[in-house]
Amino acid sequence: MPESNFSGPAVEVNKVSFAYGRQKVLDEFSLEIPGGISFGLLGPNGAGKTTLIRLLVGLLKARAGTILTLGRKPSPRIAHLIGYMPQLPSLYAELSVIQNVEFFARIYQLTDKTERRRRVEEVIKLVDLWEHRRKSAMNLSGGMKQRASLACAIVHNPPLLFLDEPTVGLDPELRVTFWEYFTALTRQGATLIISSHTMDDAAHCDRLAFMRDGRVIALGSPDELRQATGQAKATLEDAFLYFIKHGGVNKNVQ
Ligand SMILES: Nc1ncnc2c1ncn2[C@@H]1O[C@H](COP(=O)(O)OP(=O)(O)O)[C@@H](O)[C@H]1O
Ligand SMILES: [Mg+2]
Image 1 (cartoon, rainbow, N blue to C red):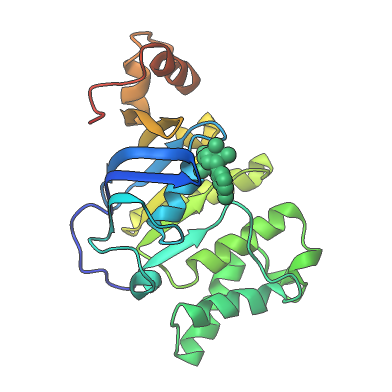
Image 2 (image 1 turned 45 degrees about the vertical axis):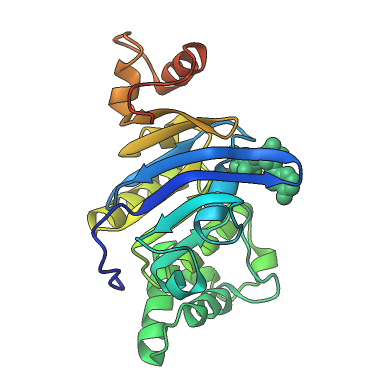
């Protein structure tokens, strides 16, 4: 894993505001994400998850406020430390799986040819696409595209990884495989920031931010959020509804 030489929070968002034209999406939004964990951004469509992730990876620029990832402003200078799997797989349709992954490996400065080849092969095997490596991206099934997109995002072994709805549309078996892999990555010290609207994903995360209408309505571990409802058998769905109903703030939210 490339060294980030940074031991502070993986992400610090301080009073960030962002709008598409006149539509305000984030208004003085603040959030701190510690390093070395899987952190879930959980919320329905339109909550602002993708917008937040795009701001964090530097694809969008905040109107106000500050963002630090690994202690630095998002910029191409730290691209080699960051992996990003967009909500819609952004593969080159006419390139094969192996060519797509190879392309990202080059962008991410894996300059040593032998090492690059080894790593490209390793990640393609990891996402179980080796036998399909010569297929064009356009001829892959939805789940295969997602796996190829994940391979592209992790080929440079980044210490900080943003995954925007990585499990949508995956069959249950593949979902389990993805989560086994995500858990292994955090054990190796990586920070994973994963957006989702399913509580199945939420349960796998070390910590969660429940998001709605561009705001964090609750922050905590899955157990803390369940327990906050005061009901012994509360599910994470129950917890989400609880925070919506109760003005949507728990003691952990600044
Ligand atoms: N490119 C865009 N142009 C205009 N509005 C957008 C754009 N992308 C997202 N939005 C709006 O911003 C809000 C937040 O969207 P988004 O960040 O995609 O949420 P999520 O990822 O949680 O579904 C929504 O109301 C959405 O319609
Ligand atoms: Mg989204």
